[in-house]
Structures are given as structure tokens and as C-alpha cells.
Length: 276
Image (cartoon, rainbow, N blue to C red; front, side):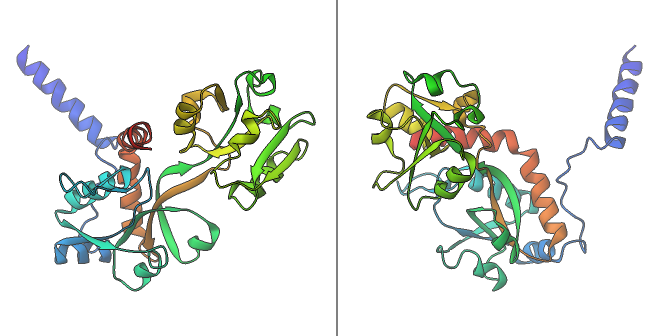
């Protein structure tokens, strides 16, 4: 009996291996990725860092790890898999992309929103998204009775937005049937309009929504699922940037990010809940 069980276990293991159950993020063999070969030879993975919550936050307490967030967790995993140390390189908003072409860093770890313009000069390794929630007063039936964001695109709904904000152009395109009201405010969202009842709904970045909902009581948001954290409204991929022409390196990093997706999401949600 014991020998049969052992044999069955070995057979199952063989079947799993033959069907691709091994890690998709196995490090490419020597010669496949010149970048990975160079990283291993140097003994360090050079990453460009710049705070961009919730994905990457600098720890200024003087104790613990220097950074935290899903971008940091993924970078540490990549370095461990390659058997090298992380070499942190401070970048600015102006240098975080050019530093790749200048070979000053291997990866821009500071989170970047994928765009067509950026894709012309760098490649992306995505692990998260930025998106928008639509919120309003829970006592307002126009949003309280709505099941989807599509239902807010109606003549009887007033949508407030901030002039010059990233959501302005999207709001005009997303709600052509609604009454639109552009506002100027120092707040990240026209909350005063909503609370005063002058507008029914307004957009807010999904990262900012949990904090607003805790600070200002009586608000609800669409999409409702997972406290709007799975919203695909105005969705933009968030990830690492690497220099072009490194397909094997990019595919390996993306496979690693995909495998770690559940863990990275948990880290992101904890930061949103505890620190933002």
C-alpha cells in the first residue's frame, strides 16, 4: 500500500510538471536575457524609487524596511529570484523614464500609469490599475437606486467635476446625457457640491474613495462591489517601466507579477485602509 501511494504521488508530480504546473516565472536561462545576465553579473538589481502611494511609500521612521507597497514587494521578489541585492536609485518625476534609456537603472519601480506616449519609449510590467469611482449622498435616490455607473448618464443627473483635473475630459465623454458642472476647488474632488445637494454625483480616484467615505459620512459610490476598488471606470494600468528591446526580461517580470497578484493586491488594500 505504501509503495503504491508513493508511486501515485510521484506520478502526480510528473503529470503536474508535464502540464506546466511549474512556476511560470522561472528565471530565463543564461543567454536568453542579456539584461538578466548583466544583473546577475553585477550582483545587484538597480531600481528607480520615488514615492507614489499606495503602490510605493518611503518609510521615514528610521526602522524597518526603507520602502513598502506592492511595488516594493515585487522588486524584492525579483531580486531574490535573481540571487542579487536591490540597489536603490532615487529618481524624480523628470528622470524616472529617461534613467532607463541612460542605463542608470534596470527598472523604474516608482509606479507609472501606462499611456500611449510612454509606451513609445519604454515597456511596461503591470500589476495594478488606477480607476475612478462615482460617489454621491446615500440619501440621493439617483445614485442610491442605481446599480451601474451607466445609469448616471441621464438627463436628470447633475455630475460635478473639477476643471483641469484628470477626470475632466473623461467625465464629459462618459456622461454626455447628464448635466455637467465644472468646478474650481482646492479639494481633490467637488465634495462641497455633493454635500450641498447642488450636484448628484462626482468622480473620485478609487484610491481616494475609502478615505473620503470614512471622513465624510453618508456617502456611497458606484461600482458598489469591493468598496469600488475593482472599478474599471477610466481604468489605467499601473506598473514598472523598463527599457525597450528586453522582451525576455519583460516577460519574466510580468509572469512574476501575475503569480504574485493576490499578494500584491492585499498589500495595496492594506496601505489604502491603514495609511491613506
